[in-house]
Image 1 (cartoon, rainbow, N blue to C red):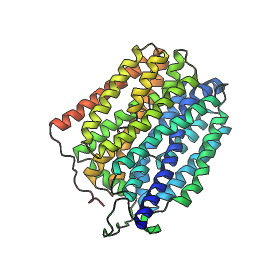
Image 2: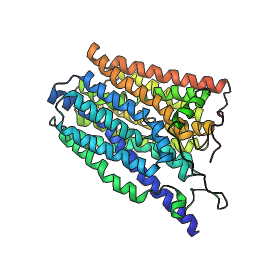
Image 3: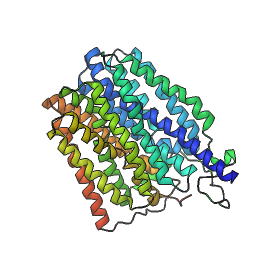
Image 4: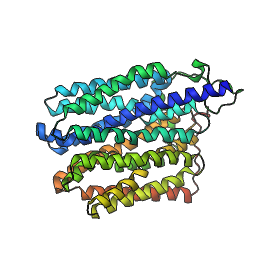
Length: 424
């Protein structure tokens, strides 16, 4: 009983610290949406320029993922997580001295993009694979929900800080939050359960310890070379592209500005994102629970289909408190609910060891979609003077993703891959 208690205690502590780290990383990535209007007022930069930096940061957030997953196998999860947090903190604090738009691109686009890429969904997949045998879907759901919780905690506070057009308090708050977490990670996150005399959650006592292999620098490319020959990879990559297009790239980056076009104050608009965050905490955790019990592809059909339809309908609402409140609740339940089923399908197809790396490449699709939406929506706003076409186009992509998943189920596609590795 004591041994079981140690397993649960250690696994829960690691899960909790990882949750907070992912929460802060989500705060870093969501901050450009709050900074858009203050930076435009203070420096005179147009929205397309500011959106381009947000797009670069989002793209790197995904592109770094597979290499961060390989780094976690060689350098270790703890060091990779601490290094990413340190880079985020130093980069955002350095931005308080920026005077040119390229300074913003370097600090919030390049450096923080690399840092957040080390503390992203691939981190959650790696931690769950290393510390959990049972309840993997639920654990991944909890960690995925941290993205929404990051918005829930950070956005109202950050928006309140910018109520007079200020932007410096935002970068200082984000930077300090990242740096404070570095020693917490180093102290409370063991590299392996065996390092503290524990086992993975739900693992039998007679199970041999997992082999601790070293990852070469070529492993991300080797895993990708094998994965691209599997139809399931392209299905996940394409649908996750749509996931990024319809969430942090579009809504996370532009909803505050979109509401501003309709006379809604930034603090009130940030409250909508916080409402989404609150309900996504419920929706994504429930999605993880459902993933342990049902076909993940059928769950994804519902998620993408409903998300697409809600975006198509949004431009036709009156932007009153009632209609926006309904949208925030409905959309929030579906915000990051796609992550647990996608991770589950990647693990089934490619094995527990390489699944985080393959999921990292799938995450590249997510961030490419998000980058396209972050820049494209800003460009559409500049060209047409309104955001409506951007939201309707994104909604159409959501419907297409649902149809692609229905086709996969109808054709009876196997969710198993080519055996990159046997599950640990």
